Image 1 (cartoon, rainbow, N blue to C red):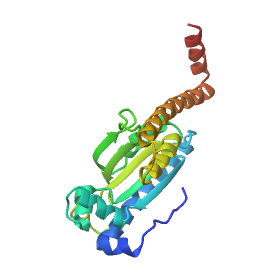
Image 2 (spheres, helix red, strand yellow):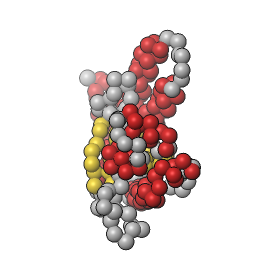
Image 3 (tube, rainbow, N blue to C red):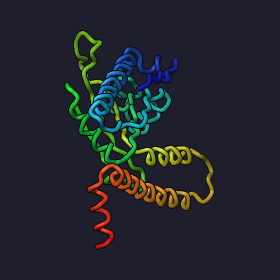
Image 4 (cartoon, rainbow, N blue to C red):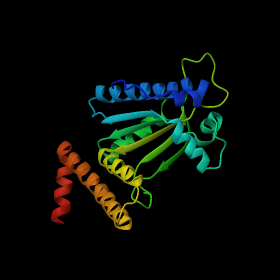
Length: 224
């Protein structure tokens, strides 16, 4: 897994202060674990369960706006202890089954603590958004002793198709003065449902290719 430097400006350094290195450490520790999980799965002769990844420290501007919306103090302490998504990693998986596989493997990381999980794949948001979210913390090996409060990290897992849809929806969400907005929302929801169906179809095709017994079962279903 290649190293991708986090985009951090003076605004983030000023807002997060001494906590910034902890957020960066949480991202790096988690990515290190994911790197070894991927390598180990490949060493067993299995396919890599992750196609790509993205990592970020939430911008100071975005975090401040979120704190204000929630009626919370606009401070680094509030961001880390109340909102808990200042550090984030997104794992893009080839298929939905890989998401289940990765979530199970993530839960097995030594020392990991999972605060909550939200399954927006089996229970999508009303607009059609699908993803699996985990808020977790894990030991920071570079510290001589654990911090007083856990350093939380938000992990999102999506398929390639889900990520493509979410990227388009995110861009349109912040466009101003869009005509026919209700129609666009309706079409985005329709596309999300079609993408979910396509995800399942592609997964079935891969299983047919890789498992001869599954091919016989599939043909039996068709003939029956």
